Length: 174
Image (cartoon, rainbow, N blue to C red):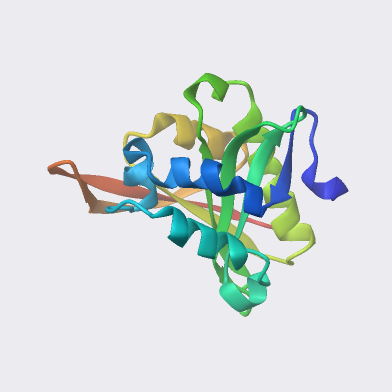
């Protein structure tokens, strides 16, 4: 677990006790735009998801970890998804759930830890992120860690009555 611990936060596997936290995050409409969610999730559905969270990334093609501060408080989630071991690439997503916890460096440290994990332990050649146009906080976060803007999908997402671009950022392990 040493590779998933930083100076401010650590990343850990989902636990059954995370039901309330994950349920609250998944049902927070503020996050639906970035998660492509359109309907709420029941506690039952989240419980089933948590019961299967132990499955191997090579089987389910994704891994979700909880971002915790060093006092063991859950502050967010970070995901590896669209995992393609043959092509050695995966997508990343990150969310600091509590607005009062943003701006403390938790996201940057979590992203750095997960990038290192992807390159060192999963032997990924590249990782990427899709960021909704206008999300300057995420753009800055990914760019500060060396991700490069490689494309724009015009009018890609439709949310609250308007279309937004989606920007593709990529980091290649050289």
